[in-house]
Image (cartoon, rainbow, N blue to C red; front, top):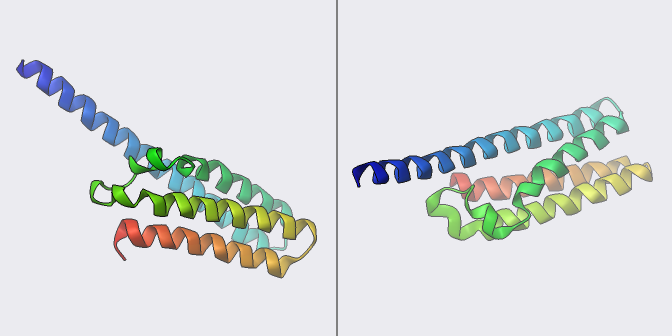
Length: 131
């Protein structure tokens, strides 16, 4: 019986560690995408911006399901998964708007969309990190 409890606890902990590892990798991919977008604007390289948006889209998929999002939040914040879910929708919308503006060579408008992405990230981080 003791062995069963130990195995169950180990399994539970490993799921938590895997969720943490997934989130760390995901946030790293998101940061990399944001960095590419910013460099694309700084160096006037639309291809780099588009590559960054692609990375952002890939990373953002993790938060497209509100129930799945809960497991990546701290236990005391899981009831606020809607905030992460809504931030993910804002990120998708702003990044899509950015690509449309880029295609029209509306760089100022595209950059405003970049700011909207960062604001959505910050809104989620403010809740998760308790800022």
